[in-house]
Structures are given as C-alpha cells and as structure tokens.
Length: 351
Image 1 (cartoon, rainbow, N blue to C red):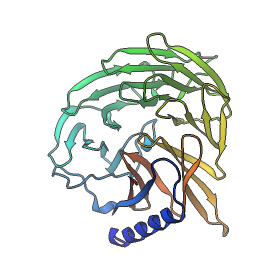
Image 2: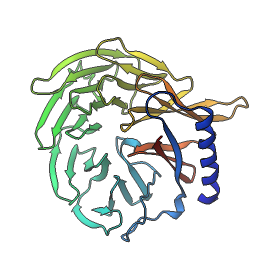
Image 3: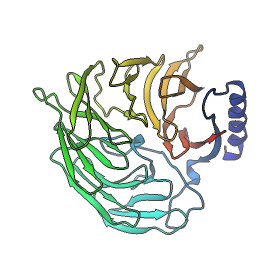
C-alpha cells in the first residue's frame, strides 16, 4: 500500500482522538500525520533532496542502538544520520555531509561511523574508543581517543559525555577540554551503562555496575561534586536510557518494570508500566517522555503501546497498535515511527 492509503486514516484517527481526549492545562499540543512513505521509495543519492527523509531500517554494528541518534540505513554498505538541516552519511570509507536541497561533499576518509545527536555531527568508532566532532562546513572541532570501548553517549549544547567500559566518563567541552569522572569501581564492577547531562549543564547522572547497578548524580561546574548514590533494581547488560527535564529537576531512568523518576530532594519514584517495557525516548521541545511497551490483547495477540508522560509523570497520550515500531524517535518537533515496511512521521502542533 502507498502513502495515499495510510495518510487519510492517520489524520482521521488523530483528529478524533484529540476531540475525544483533549489535553488540559498549559499549551495544548496535538500530533498530526505529516509523512508516510514505503522504504523502497527512499533511495539516498548525490542529487538534492526535495524534502527531509528519515529512514530507520536496520541497526548499527556498535554498542549503541539505532535510536541513539537520528540514524538511517538504506543499504548494507551505507550508514548515515540526519539533523533538521543536513544528512551525514558514509559510503565505503568516506564520510559525506549534505545540506538538504544541496549537493553532498566528502569531508573525511575514516573507519568510524557517522552519528548525529541533535544538530551536532560526530564520527564514532565505539570499539576503538574514538570520537570526533565536525561543524556544518565539515571542519573538525575536536577529537578524543579513550583507553576502553565506548558504552554510552550523552550530549547537550555545551558538552559531550562519553561513558567507557573501564568505568570512566569523559566530559568533553566544545573547546575540546576534557574532565574525567571515575565511577568508583568496586572490584571490577564498574562498566558505564548510561550517562545523562542536563540541558543547563548543571547536572550529570551516571549508571554503572555489572553485579549491582548504581545511579550517581553530580553537579557540574568549576568544582564538580557527587550529589547522591542510589542502588537500582535493574540488571541491564546494554546501554540504559536516561533523560533530564529541561529544568534539571527530574531525571528519568528506564527500568525493566517502568520509569524511575528521580529528584535531588526525594526518594526515587517508580512509575509502573503495566506492559513489558521496551524502550523510551525524550522530546526536549516539550519536556515529554515517550515509552514503548508490549502486551497481550484479549485474543492473545501481541499489542504495542506508545505512552506520552509529562515531566511530573502524568499520562498525556496513549495509543495501541498491533504493529511493532522497529524504532521511534524525536527529530525536532516530529515523532517518527518505522513500522513494518513503512515510515510514519507525526508532527506536533501547538494549539
């Protein structure tokens, strides 16, 4: 089926949902269908793009999963990511930077993979612990070489935080200055599974541990300090997603059975997710958290649920589908799903 079949149904659904369950308080936001396209209709090339294309097919062969950045992959030998204005991709051993509506140009010969985080462009080799950042002209801003494989990444406008297998988190400033945070290893129990940096650069959170997993929070600045340490119930053996709210009051941490909401002034609060937790993502524009989970329907069929939470933990939006979104992410004001062989993009509009 082509996009002309899906688009009217999507528009009707979200229009009816909005009138049946209006959001209350503050600025109202509604998601409307903006784009739906089969994978086979998308073929990146050196010719100008007429519109922004988002492809989420396949996963990187690296420690981090495909939802860590705005990633796309259309062919086995083609890797790439996009921002709101540029595509950053690799063909063969060459990195290309392409502004939408313009022609691409080569910027580097490298073994690393392209990664876009927000509006920032990185080349990363996770196993070799190498990362460098480019500006929109293709010039290198800084590069970093660690001693152990990269296991987690976080960023804001001021810093890039890199977690490593040896229990070290390196905080890299825009100038290339580096501050290292050892994660107090206990007899080798120190792998960094998650790191988060607040938007105002006042806080950083780290999850580490093999046998026991710990959540530690720090203040950032001239004299960084350890604020707190909490033992978690989770036993993840993969990167753990964490997000700060825009005001750095709330820290969200994914757990096997729900969302952990953490503040400096109160004990951690677990918000249960009734279904099996799969993953989550963060909308920095609206300070919202989106959770994807799995459950069984009345007939035994598998259902997938997407929920949107406010920073305080209130459910704002819920939608069930029988199709598994292979990945979903926020790109600017768009919520993007890849479902079966189709891409669906929902655009958030403030009312």
